Length: 159
Image 1 (cartoon, rainbow, N blue to C red):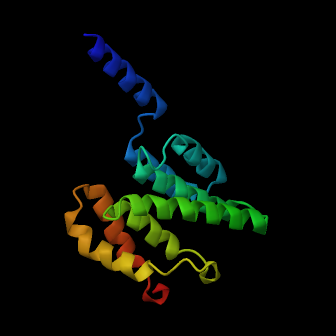
Image 2 (cartoon, rainbow, N blue to C red):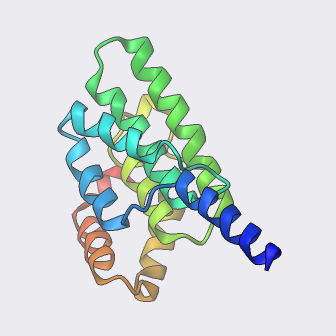
């Protein structure tokens, strides 16, 4: 009985550390974050409790939102700082879950939307191939539609 109570309490403490957030809500905020610094900061704040130990996907979204903050600041040094910080987090998230289609999609969208001088495009072709080959495996129909649409709209000039 004591053991059960201790396990329950430990679980409750762990559960309280990471909020219950739906991935659909994160996707929506992420989509809006591109045009709003306020939403971008809100997204980063919501995802703050998540890291490589508890949720690689949400770490990937936090990383991507961090890189997106570079779009919203004026200072070039701040832009580069946000980008580098987010890039490291995203690469860590992908390293933890190489087969995660959504993480690879996040990296692909970033690589197809940033200036070439940032030199973050080496995985663009492999991510595009991975996404194209994996799209049939996606169970989440909303995510499948998002990825399919994006792959169709990305111009070959980005490759």
